[in-house]
Amino acid sequence: ERIMEIRRKNCNPMTMKITYYKKPVFLHQGYMQWLWDFDGNRYLDLFAGVATVSVGHCHPKVAAALQRQLSKLWHTTNIYVNPTLHEYSEKLASHLPDPLKVVYLTNSGSEANDLAMLMARLHTGNFDLLTLRGSYHGGTQQTMGLTSNSSYKYPIATSSGCTHIMCPDVFRGPWGGSHCRDSPVQTTRQCSCAQGHCLANDQYIGQLKETFATSVPSRIAGFFGEPIQGMGGAVQYPKNYLKEAYQLVRERGGVCIADEVQTGFGRTGSHFWGFQGHDVLPDMVTMAKGIGDGFPMGAVVTTPEIAASFAKAFHFNTFGGGPLACAVASSVLDTIKEDDTQQNSHNVGTYLMTELAKLRDTYEIIGDVRGKGLQIGVEMVTNNKASRDPLSPEAMSEIFEDIKDMGVLIGKGGVYGQAFRIQPPMCITKEDVKFFLAVFKKAIQRYMD
Ligand code: PMP
Image (cartoon, rainbow, N blue to C red):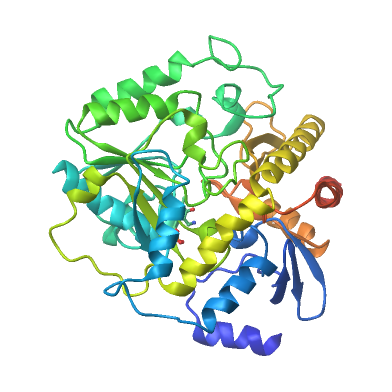
């Protein structure tokens, strides 16, 4: 372990932040929802390498598909007819509604969003792009412009033409908006809107319209929105918020892009794509992470009309849609169906959220439980009832490391690093959830004692 620590310090950049810095874990093996370190300790993985392992670590069916392709063909690039790419594209497109049928394959989510930025600008002839505050859309220099969270960006190198909008109080859970969001678990907290629970919230929509009237350019190229914010801490928007945003964007000549990098492939349980929970039809859908169960891959799916605006120059991506990635991704789609992964995400996720909501009603420091399916955020707060300040990074770390020491890996996120994130491989069971809940309770209790 020490050798590994020295290698990391000497050869890797400071930007490579290790989550468990007090006592790092050295993972070297995985199977389905389980990971093992070099000492043979087993961990229940509830973060899936940042919401990426969709059907399970080294899933036997996916591993077999990769093995088959490994001994057949690794690489040609798409200057040749590439059967795996064409077959996969057709299969992926069949999972999207019309007219979203043209598939571009990339190697990551940032690449996918970068390409979508370009296509939005080419198609509309406009330059300005909008995203929501708290969003994460990538780490390339262009996509850093889309990403709003300042801890992930370097303003001097960030692309221009990107504005981040959102009504301020939608940010943090029950202090605005939680009652309005699309959730399988109803909040018991006081509703702060005028209309009551789960109604279209005119106040938020009003703020959105006001923002467009005052701070949004009159012509825009496009709007990027995650159906549920991932890195932002499983932030959900009030009902009809995205729908209204899509309309306002289209009125200004822009196209709408659903960033499904975290929410796609059944993660939200009730739908295959997160956007389907918002009653909207995007012009482009970008995806990555779960698409390849951990194998590097990404995609943009768009309409023939938008694709036609992007046909002048030769567009080339050496590795995008390579045979290995396509074989894996194709098997992931089959496995989601065969293992009933989306339904499991709904069932186990709803159970977990229901149980977490009970803990929230017991422990003052759990401010909010939100999300859908297996994309869940637990907002941690101080016990100051009036301010509900985010729990400090030190306190978050203490609980987080304790949970790890008891054998469960979860994630962290949110603009203040105040939310625990649970986005496991979608094969987890109710038994796993019970184990996690016992661990989580113990860690909170220990922190408070
Ligand atoms: N979009 C979203 C919503 C993401 O969460 C991420 C990664 N966390 C990205 C885009 C960028 O994906 P990648 O890291 O594969 O470039």
